[in-house]
Length: 247
Length: 59
Image (cartoon, rainbow over all chains, first blue to last red; front, side, top):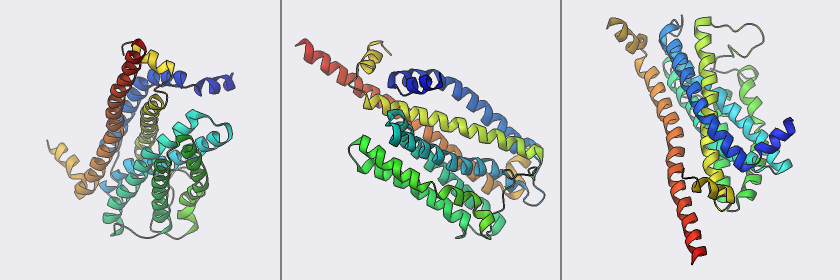
């Protein structure tokens, strides 16, 4: 049953039709999550007792930083699927995740920098957390550059899959950097084993924003994947049928 | 009105908070809009390809 679904999902016309039906729902849910998350975070949540209102940058910074790692894991996983089973859809998910992954990483770095200035007194320090996150941005850019440098897109996808898999060592380094090395960056407040050390009124908007970011990623990757798929399969019968239908 | 001003003021951190949100809005907005523009362009090109093939086979 599940294998059948995965097999079907690997078929370009099925993927195209299913993603087309999903997108309006994803967009609606995403907008509701962003609206409630932003209202909760910017209006309802109390100011932090140490950081005042500057802590509200958290609602962009932390979801973007989580997504920067999550998207990379998706890329590495799709890369493995593409290498082992040669699934075309896995290749397409892999390469079309790189742009939005780079955007999340860039935002985590920039909003972190904007947050660091009033709190730490500096825009940037070369500490473990910040440096490993910067390395992640270079990994994303490397994936994009490598893919565009190879003309044969199936070969390019395989090269990129290997790069994505090798780069995965950076992910635990980013996550544990605040525990392994002394750093200006604060330790984890949410993803630790005892209860999160954060007020519920601050935490709920953060979780809403985190889920909203997941939906945003899904929307962007599907939009990009659909374009990519349509162009790769432009000479196939199902694409011709799609355009004959008048849409 | 007063409540609105305090909201905008962000306890003196307005420039930091709002610039973060503005950059995020711009980045996410572009991430959605650019693929949509690309889709339009691509549909036009694919329509052209299909029409060319049809006229080639009918000749």
